[in-house]
Amino acid sequence: MSMMNDRLEKLSEQARHTFWGYLGCELASMDENKVIVTLDVKEHHLNLIGILHGGVHTALLDSAMGLVAMAARPEEDMVTSNLNIHFTSPAGPGIVTAEAEIVHMSGKMITAQGTIRSAADVLCSMATASFRVIERKSN
Image (tube, rainbow, N blue to C red; front, top):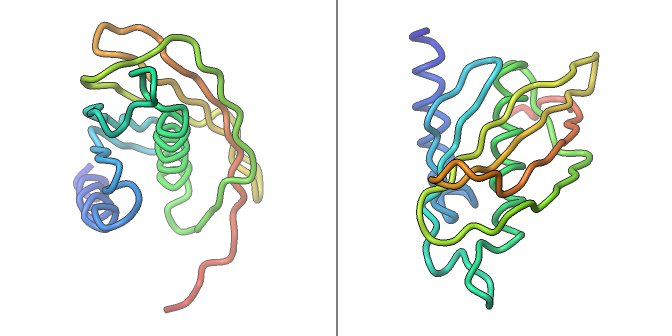
């Protein structure tokens, strides 16, 4: 458990300086089976009609599902190869929670599913994604 907590802290620090940090995502919990990410939706996350922008839904779900794929295969790097999303209910300002879990793994592919729920536990969007394992770049 301590190794996962150390990994969680390291990933959170690294991500702070990427698109993840720019969005304002927070990693609430992570293990090899499930990831929970939160976002405090602010005005700059909204579209012109005042609801959470679809691109933010997509980025949040892609990030959460990518993290659970990374947690399942920590020694390998991967990239999103496919993502399908369904928008089910609008979200406005306030905390939303993305949960992601692994659906299937094979040699070079991982499939995950994820949801975003509002603070009132309303399903706002759901997605599936496939991730391709790639060769790790040497530094």
